Length: 180
Image 1 (cartoon, rainbow, N blue to C red):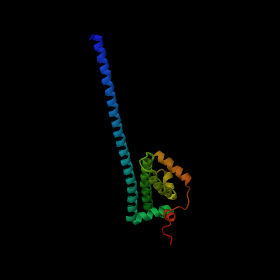
Image 2 (tube, helix red, strand yellow):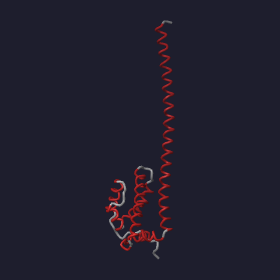
Image 3 (cartoon, one colour):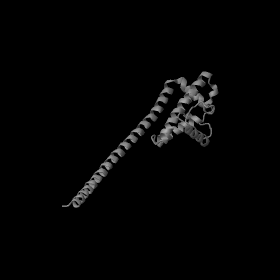
Image 4 (cartoon, one colour):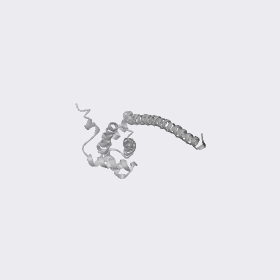
């Protein structure tokens, strides 16, 4: 066999081995992509689960705080009805409540926008948010700029305010839980 034929044979053999290597590489990459997709889906599911849990945790903690603090519950209730009945100290506590309430809603809103918090969970929070923004006291705090939320959430709240003008809305009246 001459030198040129031998070189041709080695070239053909190299192409054959290279083709097999490409097939194995593509197979390996396909398996890795599947594992990566599965890991991403598991991570997304985990993030959604955590966001859903945190959302429920916020509800629970707020309910417990108000249930265990009758004076704070009264302050919040009065704030929704007529904050002018509150003294200066209670109005400060009401502003602090509005602040923490809106900061939590801002965080949850962004979880919702990022696709982490399910829509049905966010819609429940949205209803409570609509109730909160119906209060004259809340409106004064909001317009005074005491609630440091993201610009995107601020725009969302303004949209909600336009879509839900002030009424005699209140949590107790809306729920009608105490009508006998």
